[in-house]
Amino acid sequence: MVHIRFEGRSLDLSETQLGITAGMNDMAVKERVSRHLDVNVNCLSAYVLDRRPSGDLIIRPEAVYG
Image (cartoon, rainbow, N blue to C red; front, side, top):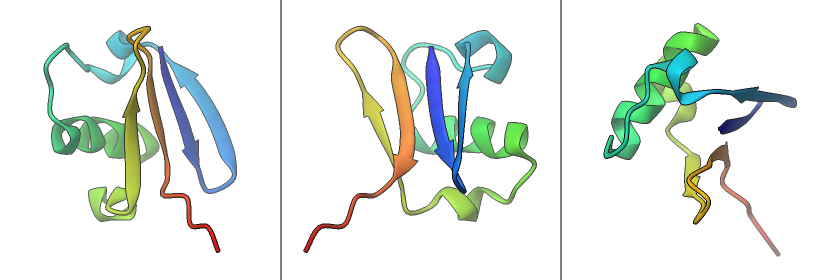
């Protein structure tokens, strides 16, 4: 499962829907997600990919505290 937080929206998609395979690096994943969202990949440059032990992937804005 891939959970995406983008511009106030939440999306849950399968890896198959995005064309993501095991072992893809962060940039390749961001490219696939940007295609799905129909945005330039640069829009995701400050986003974090959180790979969970369960195998799920969370793509979210970087958290800023303080």
